[in-house]
Image 1 (cartoon, rainbow, N blue to C red):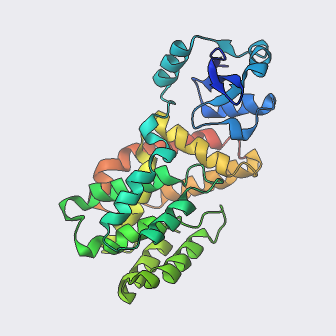
Image 2 (cartoon, rainbow, N blue to C red; image 1 turned 30 degrees about the vertical axis):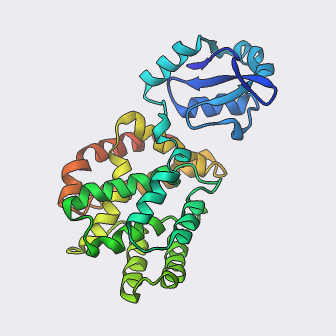
Image 3 (cartoon, rainbow, N blue to C red; image 1 turned 135 degrees about the horizontal axis):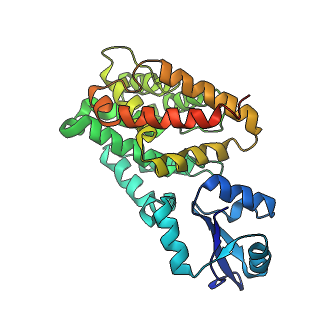
Length: 298
């Protein structure tokens, strides 16, 4: 076990708090927290905030007490540290500026979408994911990203998980939301139809050959599969927490089935640029995760 805790020296709510972390995996951290009745709301991206009254109990249970500086050093070295600029609550200004740059003149709709992406039940499908998809679109579209032809793709990025409940109909409901809201801010009917089509494509991430816009959106949405080992593990841990209500064996079977489908379905990415940038690392990540899941799925 690699559970670490620093002294209770962070003041809040009339007491002092410690940080409880793992330098091995978020799964280990959440398991330790559940075993010792720490509330889920105490988790903040890479650590649990622990009140002073629980410090001695957690040390007795096996948490290793360390000075705050050493705890942070070990968390950074593990790759599990979530930097301040990556925290979704810091992203509101960035996202509102990105929305304004679309030129729709509809700040109210931008704020409504941002509120949806900020819902409490989201762990992975949150503001950080939206920013990642938009930045990945920039990478794939290159110098042509500001062209009017790309407006439907960027709007589809904003809407593709605008409805997120972890249900099978999320993509359909997100597409329906785009069809409902975009005409009211003056978006042309043909653009709305294209946004709806693109959002629905994220159900399969399999655009038809020659579907340039579909390839851009689907590849940007799957960029997360090609991240470094530590970042990929943060992603899988976040997805697991979004499905915390599903028993481990059932989740492992479902997730393994999805991964096998991706690996056996040809290239993971549909654009030449996406394959060049991300295919090799993504396949390695998926194969590694699948090897870990298969024993649990039996």
